[in-house]
Length: 262
Length: 200
Image (cartoon, rainbow over the protein chains, first blue to last red):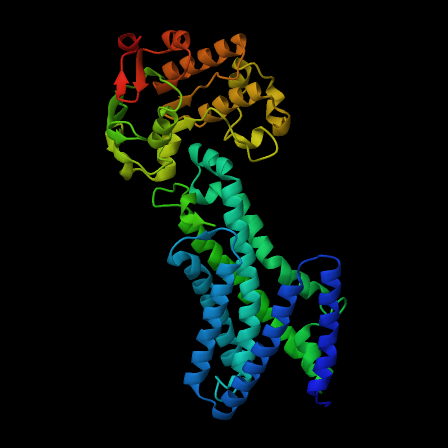
């Protein structure tokens, strides 16, 4: 296994710097965001590397749980930040948080207890990376779906209410939108599974192979991850859409768009 | 009373109380922006509202929301369509009804985006009637129609009222129309209901 030096990473960073310079040249206006994101990547990943190093040395359930909930809290914030229209009040944060908690934590526990079956089950070397992959992908699915749902409800208010007027229930009045929204949350992982290995080599597997793991072992882990992500993102999206639809309507099944804020 | 309304608070209006008997058509006129459309939306329970509304003596809160709206059906002045063909918006096809409204039987296969505004309005009345509501809340149901089609819609709605013993609350800007179709007429002003003669 070839260890990367700081110089190696600096060389890779020159590519990003070059991209930023070109972006400035063509007035794309993303060079600032690009620079900030690149710096965040370095700082955040170095930090998590140090945290994992310390965590691996202790194998304490308490610390694993603490880090897990911190990751969840950040993912919840991220989902909220990505919404064009979000629910006002605690729902804005809560819907993403609860749905990611249900799906990502359940699927990670399933993977750790049933599939990996490690001793102890919360060994951080397995628990944290698995949860991280799941949270990241569930977060994408949930935020795409929620954004699409609230946007569609606003755009199609007249149609939704027309169906309510004709005696449809809240769920019926939203049936087309719910279908599209659920699709949009699941399409990324479906595409990733369909293209895996042919068009793209998934990042996790590539990383393992680069780090010296036998390819077939890396592939098996990648398959596991793909299935877990599909389940996590899928159930997370379902839960988020379910909660959001509940909040879009009140107890008399009236459409309550004023509960959304920009 | 088929529909009883007690102290319904809408918009900036004082609390409204009135009743609608089975088989009766109540005509409602009033200046733009006074809250006629909001009144109809409140009766259909589409906006949060205060007050007591009963259908056949049973309070609104005791009805499942969708069932209430199926029985107290609002036909808005502008209709919206979600599927691609006309027929998909109908719970059942009623060729006699289509014919009475001036459409051929194959209207069910027509594409929605090709309908004119007048065709939309007549078909919006039709898709409400096939669901057989007991109360119809009609918001200017003939606003986009020529004279012939206005007569058709008035005749169809009158027939439905008689056949089903339904109650109609009919909002219109045309005093002549309300004189033709309504048993009782009310004028809604900023201070509530008045008989139109008293205002005029």
